[in-house]
Each structure stands twice: as structure tokens, then as C-alpha cells.
Image 1 (cartoon, rainbow over the protein chains, first blue to last red):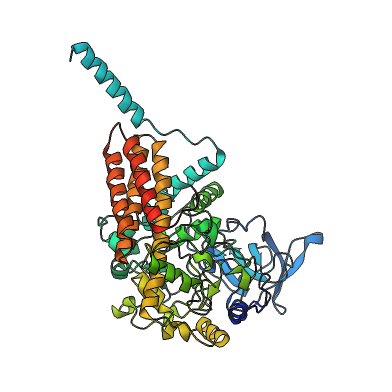
Image 2 (image 1 turned 180 degrees about the horizontal axis):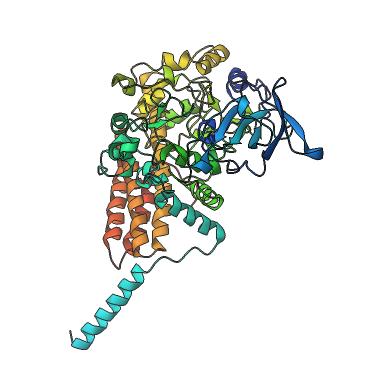
Length: 139
Length: 452
């Protein structure tokens, strides 16, 4: 978890010692907004409340670069590469088979597989926060 | 009485009875209808799961939380105890002992891959005054550590995570088999209902309190060289002081060292209670700031229900656990001292919190009493029961602190009148109006009122 040192609303006005301390507390101890990832695992592709359809990519993987640890999403002008970082959570969505969703691995990401991707930064679309991969028979 | 008169009286009685039993008419304005829909979902919708609803743990008659004392009143087949009655949930879903003794609920906040060992035990936070406590300039803060909701992390999304965590038929947690996920329409309604609960705005300190001890407690509370409480609980709410943290800081997370308290009740049992690392995976040890106006009647306190009394919760900030914590250390570094209140000062701050809680109870009770006057018999009785519970809370928080016997007397009278109204078949309005006046007298005993 990285510290968030760009707190927009904090003002280091130092009107009093406690003001300085409190500002420091904010800078050091508060984090960017984060959704709960543990239950997210069980939400099927396309059903994440407040994200699916607006903040995530839902579609198929166009290509995978294992060396660079990126996946290519989209087609034509919308095609873009997304980094899979050590912090990216990968889950296998097995809901359609009536099975519990499980943790996945980078190797589960393959061209043609249906995925939902949440970006770390929805505007930049450079790194994945999490990826849900639709299960295939046998997963 | 003649036969004709008797028949007329009987007919009128039957008609009145039928009128009283008719289903309530739906609210006319869209927002009220959405809130009503949300209330229905909150208390009745099981989402095809194990039988629990949102109201299973967030009890309206227990301040939308649930305490060990309340749990002790529930029948064995209450859905709260589903881990004791459903074999599929017997292991790794709840800890029945910790639930019954300390009101603790099991959560798999850091993942579901090692259920026997990887979990946290937390109390049930009330969902009052959410209108004032969820927003921060870093996004919405829900649950004890601020990251309680999946999806976009919003209050609207919270129910989806709650269904997955608390409602499943089996621990496979397969949507469509173990539960169904809330629809967008249901999430909208649940959010609207939850935002309608309790205070809709912050109080503004200082209040013109009449009691000398509570007034002194308020002065300590807002003194940034003594109590230092107001910095993080601005106006006794859940948000940081905007003069210190910026105008839009809102709700903040801190590591105050609660996890380092010695002799935590749950630990004393010998049951496995893994450390709770708070916000994020892995957690950073921080938890978000709860509102204090509603605190005195919603104990036990802190995310792990580790302190039973409001005096103990205030005294926590005197101890090593807080003063050695990251939050306490920075406070000490900047001000030259930690928080170091004497016994009388701890009690005074707690008295302040008790009085503002009672004032909120009175505000809510009067609103409920007014609401009941516009309702038909059965809905009105349900509303009056909530008004009685609120009044009981006000009495308890004042009596528990040895505060304001005059106000307590008025509250007891208000309670008697509200009870009379709840029992009355035809003549609710008179005792309800009298109960409102008694509540107002109780409020006037607590605080100088500048206007009507």
C-alpha cells in the first residue's frame, strides 16, 4: 500500500501545532479511495456496482506479451496495452458453470478470453487493478 | 342501547377497524417512494441467501447496530445465528461464542483463500447519520476501515459486498446458487434508505448545555491543547476539522492503536482472533473515524468492540495504545504532549457525549412521534415502538452517567404517554401530542433553546 501524498484538501497552514500534526497525519496515514477487493472476487464479469459499464473494460483479450507482462485490449483505435503489476489481482469467473470464483494467474490471460479489467487509473488505462477472466470448461 | 344503535356502533367499529388495517398507501413523491422501497429491502429481502437481511445485524430497535445485550433477546432460530443452524455454515462463517458474548461478526476482508485462519472479527457499526460521514476527498468511506464496499467503494455498492460476505447459503459463494446479487434498482433504494437514517446534518459546537459537567466536557472536547477530540471528530461528527485538514477533507482514516489494546475481551476467551490490519490488502492499520453524536447508545466501542462503556472509550486516548500509536505519536510530537486527561475530565467528556446522544434521541423521537400521527394503526404502532426504544436509550445514557434527573423524569413521562398511544385503538393522537411535549421539556432541561 503506497502512501498518498497528494491530498487535495489538506492545507499545511500550520495555524497551530495541532494543525501541522493533523496535516501530517493525513499525509502519512490516509490512502486513496479503495474498494473492497475480497468480495469483488465473487462478482461476475459485468456486474461490479458503480464500475461495470462505466469504469472498467469488458471485452476480449487481443494479445498478451508475457515478457512485458501486458495484455492488449480493444480493437482499432481503441486498442491499448495494460500492465499486469505484482499488485494486480486476477480472478477466474466461474459463475456460468455454477462454481465458486477462484484466484487466477497471469498464465490464465490468453488472447480471445473474455475479461473485465479495472484500471488503477480509469483515465490513463495503463495498469490493471484487477482482472476477471471468464472461465473455460475445465477451469 | 337499542338494537339499531348497537348495529350502528358495530358497523362504525368494523369500518374503522378495516380502515386501520388497510395497507399503507405508497408515498407520492419519488424520493420518499425510493426510501420506502429501500426500507422494505433492508428489512425483508434475503437475496435468496441464508435467510439474513440487512436488518438482521442492523436492528432498527437497536440503533441500526446490534449489541450483545440485544443478541441475548433473540430466539435460537433468528437468522443471525445461521452458523448454529445451517450445517453448511457451521465452520469458518461466524464464531458463535464471540457473536453472543461480544456482538462480533466474522469478515474475510483480506481474502477468502484461507478461511480458518484469515479473517477479522468486528462489531456491527450503526448506519445512522451516513449522510454526514461517508464522504471524503479521497472517495467514499464505508465500514469500519473505510474500504467496506466492492465495486466503486460507495455506500450504494456496499450491499453487494454484504450479501457476498454475510448472506450465502454455502461458503462457495456462487451468485445464482448461494445468493443473488442486488439489482441496480435495489442498490439505489438501499442507498436512499440508509442515507435517510438519523441525522441529516452536523450539529454545531459549542452547544449551550445546561449541565455543568457536560458543559465542561464539551470545553475539553473542543480544546486542541487538552482533549484534542474536535480535530478529528469535528462538531462531534465523523469528519476532520476543516480548519486543520482543509475544507473538503471529510472522513479520515487513522491508526490510533486500538489493535494494540491489552486485555481485549475477545482475546481473553482464547478464541482465535487474528489481528485486524484495517484499510486495504494488506492493511495499513488505519480505521475510519466514526461520528460521536450517536456513540453513547451504540457501544461496545471501536471496530473490535473492545471497550464496553463510553467512559472507557474516552479513557482509551489516555493510554499507551493510543499515545504510542502513529496517530498519538504525531500528536505528541506537534503539541508536546499526548492526551492526558484526569478521571474527572474523562467523565466530563463522556458526560458531554451522553448529553448530545440524548439530544439526538429526543430529536429522533419527536420526528417518529410526529410521523406516527400521520400513519394508520399498524404502521403507527411500529413507529411508536421505535420512539419508545429511542426514549429508552435517552434515559439509559443519562442515567448511566448520573446526569440530568430532571430530564430523565420528563423522558419517563414521555415514554408512558407514547406507550399509551401505542396501546390505544382509536385515540392515539392525544397521548402522542402529550409525549412530544414531554420530550420537548426533556430537551429544555438539557440545553438552552434560542428559538422554537
